[in-house]
Image (cartoon, rainbow, N blue to C red):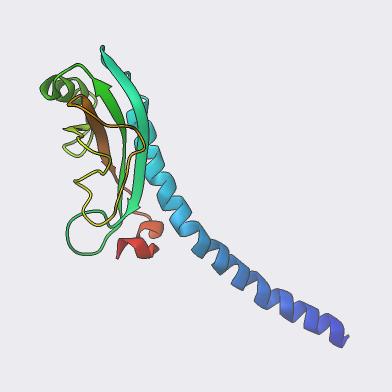
Length: 151
């Protein structure tokens, strides 16, 4: 009888502790997935003519600005014979708001507009023909509030 009681107590205490641990481990995974989905949305947009896809990038954390809060960014690196203005015009058709489908010239392997984290690209960037097309993602769930990377 005493063994059964000890076993029940171990299970009664073990299950909530395991659930809390699993939840805590899932927080950065869920937030990274949100950033990945932001990048996937950009990647699914058909490329304009004379443009080549090079790679995808995404990041979750406190990326720019002041204060606390989780931020998500995802996008692609492209190489194009088109001008910056032509690419901005092309991608503006897919933008849902001012933080969506942004196009900027990319001159080296580090993405400069991300202030608090380092996001490096793997592709060889040379010349004036590389651009990043990116969006800032959004999520108002409990996961974004509890991720320590946003503080």
